[in-house]
Length: 123
Image 1 (spheres, rainbow, N blue to C red):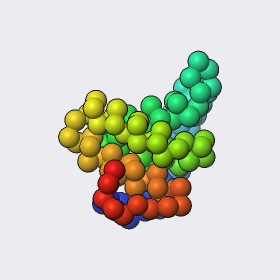
Image 2 (cartoon, rainbow, N blue to C red):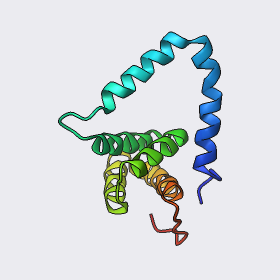
Image 3 (cartoon, one colour):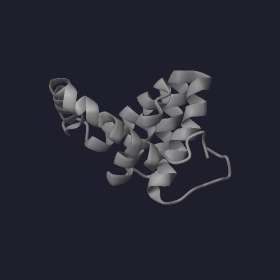
Image 4 (cartoon, rainbow, N blue to C red):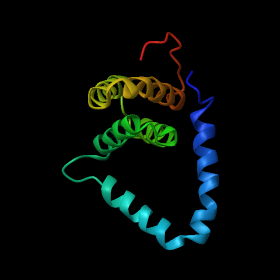
């Protein structure tokens, strides 16, 4: 497992930590929500493809919470382990060594939300 004990716990904690921002910065948070819905809406690219892109950027940006939220969305959208690993290969290519280390964490998040773990150490 990565430095994160549970991506499910992390996403719950981040969601809870966002509550004060929703209450005190409602316009900003509503705007961000609208941006998210518009960016991820199916169009020329389907929602799963857009979530794969978002996860790749999360890996390259080394955003722990992004890994959890996008892994959960990708499982919900039916991403296969093969699709997920191919996306990780592109993220590593674009982000180099630091992205390789985060790709391992992203795979742990995807496997956690999929209900299965591969503790072999192989991304």
